[in-house]
Length: 102
Image (cartoon, rainbow, N blue to C red; front, side, top):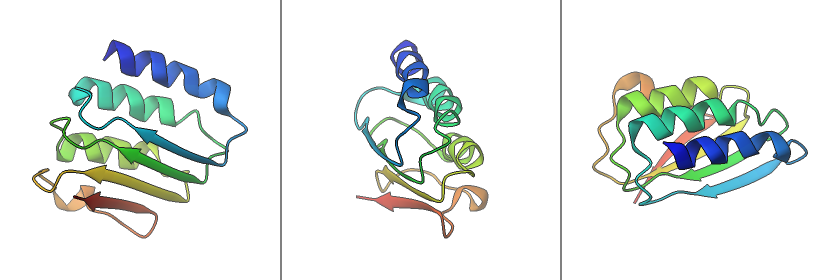
């Protein structure tokens, strides 16, 4: 979670961005790190198109729901996850929040 915290803290310096792609696949992000990232993404008020690769980080429905809630201000969000990720109905994708599996 410490690495995610450092990354999330740095998001405040990226305010002029409108598009951002973050590759964190197979980095041991974990549940705590994902929650920290979700709060960090809230700082990206100018971003309208966000892509995040979180595959192979042992994340599930709770973490995806936290991301979905925190990213409601972003008009287009793509989260890349491995196919085995457990998903519940409230975490499923919507028009602006897409979960892409590989």
